Every structure is written in C-alpha cells, then in structure tokens.
Image 1: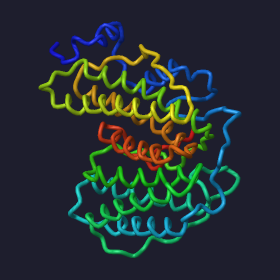
Image 2: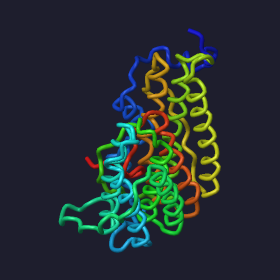
Image 3: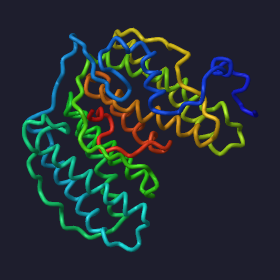
Length: 334
C-alpha cells in the first residue's frame, strides 16, 4: 500500500480496526469521547442535561420573521416556476422539488415560532410563494442572497432564534454551493428540539468531537496515495479540522474553560477505497453538525466563531458526500 501516512503512528493505532464506515460505528466512537455521561447525547442528538445551562428557547415571534418569510416566498416561487423547465437535468429537477419542500418547512417554522413542533397543534398556513419567473441562475442567486441576509439575522439574535437563522443560512449556502443536483437529499423536514448548555460546556463538547473528526479524517488517508484524486480532498479536511481544534481550544481557554483532550483511539475503522475514504469524512461531518448547532444556541462571546463553524461545516459535509439538510445544526427528530 502506497500511502503518505504509512510512516505515521496512526497506522499502528488502526491496524486492528475493521472496515466499518457506517453511522453506527461513528456513534460508537462518540460514546468514547467521554460524552456517555450526558444522557441522550450523541453526534446525532446533542441534547445536554446540564443544570447550569440556561435554555433560551425559540417561540412566539422570531425576530426578522416577516423579512424571512419574504425571502423564502421568493425562493419557493422561483423553484416552483421551474417545474416544467426542460433545461434542467433530472438531478436539478429533483433538487428543485426538494427546495420547494424545504422552503415550505422553513416558512411554516417561522410562522409558528420554531422549527420543531410540540405536537399540540398544527402549524399555521404560511403565505403563498411569490409569483416570479423561472430561471435556475436566478434561483441560485436568491439562495446566495438569503445566506448573507439570514447570517446577519443569526448574528443579531441569541439562543434558539440565532440557531434558527444560522441553520437557514447554512441551508441556503449549502444548496447554492451544490446546485448540480448530484447531492443526496435529507427527507427530514422537522427537527427535534435541542437543549442548550452553557457557552463553555457547548464549546468543550464541540472540541471533544472535533478530536474524533481529526482522528477519522487522518484514518481516511490510510488507503490513499498522493496520486489518488481523493487525497487532496481528505488531506484538506484533516488539516482543516486540526486548525479548527487548535483555534477553538484557544477560544475556550479565553472563556475560562478547560479544553478536553483526545480520547484516541476511537472505534472508527479504516476505509479501503478512495470513495469510502471521502464518504467516511462526510459521514463524520454530517453527524457533527447538530453539535455545532448546540454551540450556536449557547454562544454569547463566541457567537461569530460558532456561526462561522456551522456555515462552513454544513457545506463541507455535503462536498464530502453527506446529504443536504433542511435544518443543518438541529438534531433530527427521533
């Protein structure tokens, strides 16, 4: 095996690992992060039982709601107008239909005051989509503008209201960046309700799980050589997560928090092909998004960094094979 990581200690660490790239294997790794003491806490569901935390729930009228409804009305209208466009590929048509569904879900969430539902009442009917001309580039442009505007809304809110806007911005940016129609599409349109921890606790959990991402990304390099087309993709992901871990550790220390150490080796097995290597990274990153969202909801002093992490990680997860999500950063409904 020709691999640029063959001389790294990771080969020895991973020699006994079997080839498992499933979500189940990664959640096993999460349990080894020291998060097992947090009841119900896993990569896919960062519900944190922290008596020192102060949940700041969404509900009532979300700030900037009317502006958001107008933005989504434009997006849904543009996507709906392209239903019969012969110029779109089959993949783009599938993405177009999914955008309509996602925009409807987000508009309903803004109307009822939160992305999740309590089950006690049906969400109100939101306004009709705007009547606009059908143009694919116009739709992508509207998504890019939505990302910018909604990110500004997120920066001006806190708690779950900030997470709502940050998630919508991450959705718009991810879709605009992956407009070819080749990405997988999540079928979940209503997330679960997360419970936020304190800012330091949430950031510590982010760093703890980034340790697993660094390990998994390095592990994905094992079957690759520099000549593999996937090498640059995986190596960049590995380097990026290392840099994020170090930068966020500095941030946590500045907040007076204790930086968690790595719990290697994690129970994540080495892939045996280039495709499986990239897929492993995408799976790890997708599972990480809800934890990043928990930090967004808890962040105060570190809010700009939390917002930037969610936006970048959501798009990168799709680049590496993860599905586009309607609510990136929110835990999926059980």
